[in-house]
Length: 317
Image (cartoon, rainbow, N blue to C red; front, side, top):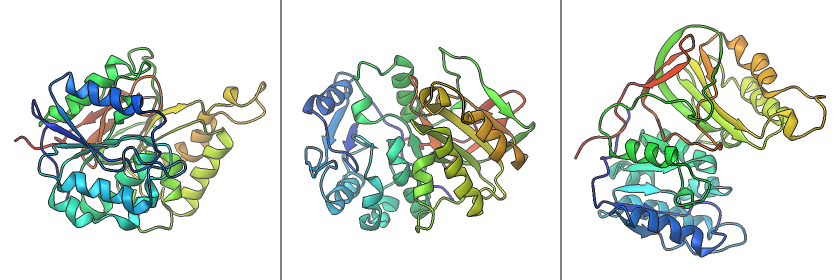
């Protein structure tokens, strides 16, 4: 059974751990803090946010401590990861999941944060949000669509309803036919495959499987789905939601098509599953990013090419 945090109220506090990459420049953090503060919110940074240990923000223990402290802090209402990139999985053996379960809060991040989404859900049942990082906020490439989606997700105690299409690209593809409801879980495909064989391997049976990826050539997507299939992870899934596969097609990797396209890969591995599937919602590394709750009931309609969030992801105050 899932547990849920509370909605973000005006003047609330955003707690920011740094579980992965270290910052590139202080302005990347400061502009995110300013984005929240100019809207009347407060921001509390974990102790390791400005720490550098090579390419990550401190030791695994330091980074895990920052996550746990943000959940334990009674002043913090929402936990938003500072950045992603690489390293979140280092923290998993060092996280006190009992503290997270005892202090449920909205937790947000994407990409490398997938490792934390999967582990937190498996250990606690907490609904989390696949959405922007602190360093995404006030970024020159971040769209208003992304910011509005995030605020809507964090402040609503009602189901989010039908997830909108990319306002700059209305096309969605579908595989198979039908309509199915179930709990949606997932994240970045690359990270999900790296959890195989660990205590935090994602369980997809009877679930709607969401995945996306970035800058992975088609043969690498093939490899990842092959590994999942051979591990039995695709057996018994209810449906599939494929977000954006940003810079993953052959055109990004070759001058001529001597490799399969990503849609070819999906026809080989996803379509034969026989379950409703849609591809192309702005859930991933593209120009727009929907803040999407994981661990809630959704309805996937492959014929209408829609994904509808049926269950509230947060409780009211």
